[in-house]
Image (tube, rainbow over all chains, first blue to last red; front, side, top):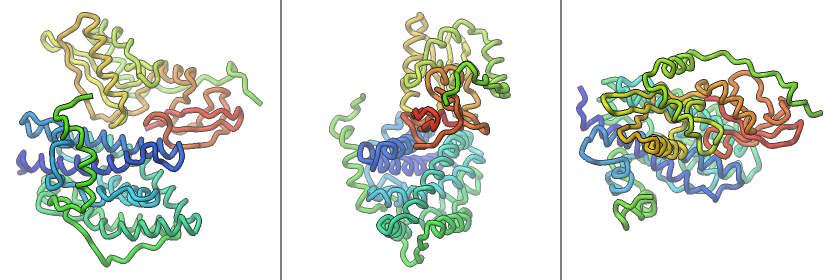
Length: 252
Length: 177
């Protein structure tokens, strides 16, 4: 049996994943390589920020302590954020952004497909919506991997470098800590470890088609779920949370 | 060659099970005038589409003295949702209703199958190609099907950008989801 505190912690993780990735994507807004791509990146960012709002809203509902979605986004520090590290890495160049997006899109689509079956009705409903969005996110990121990988020497090399730099962060996607195991056992969460073989198969197929090499598993960084982050998150939060820190409670 | 607009085949679509149910909910509702009142609330980005025609207005009920308006969001992060919620509140208040609540229902997730037939026609007249799940996409201006995708994302999350090879005009396509 899972208790409220566990459910809250679990939902909060999903909110953190969505917000942090959404914010990184939003940093492309007005900086995209061309107009249509700028719109696309901003649209995907919106999907993720919207998803974060639903998860945070649900977290606040479970907590029932007067907190709101904004409390979770703006009033917590690095160590309180429990997102997976891959989401917080700086956006890098366009190749890096698309490489990360592709790797997490493959994961998220499989994840949301399972979460749709959650015994928790709210999580299942959010997942149903997110799943639909992930379908077209993945379609788009896959096509960029193929175009850039099988493109010019420059685009190929940049994308290969990005994949190499990201690879050690992908292991964390499939890690199951105690909470994940509890949630999975209760049919509320997802057994992420079981998603790994299919993810590897799918990613390997796409990378090969894009003439890219799947990196060796020779380094791994984890810790996000415990609040142990890379240097990048603090800088991101100082920017993202500035307004609420300087003018607490300020509204649009 | 530009096809004459009047020669277009009208789109024949079957009423989906969900829409049939929604129609029934509206028809059998005790809050009839409120449904008509909220027909005045439009999508701020596509001002020809009412909340009903867009398929986000699910139900209006009266619980004790309070009115409960139930809506289902289109896309998770669509900023238009916030505006529409505020517009519902403003419309109700203007009509003298103060005791109401707007509740959001996530499941079943919104689908373009919920767009009404009238909504589809209005989209086309507005210059946006309505969503089609299997059949080819038609240019909303000249009805040609020789088109190309420019970007999977258009000016709002719900649209993709296409160009017609027949009349050379770019146009928005309402993505089927």
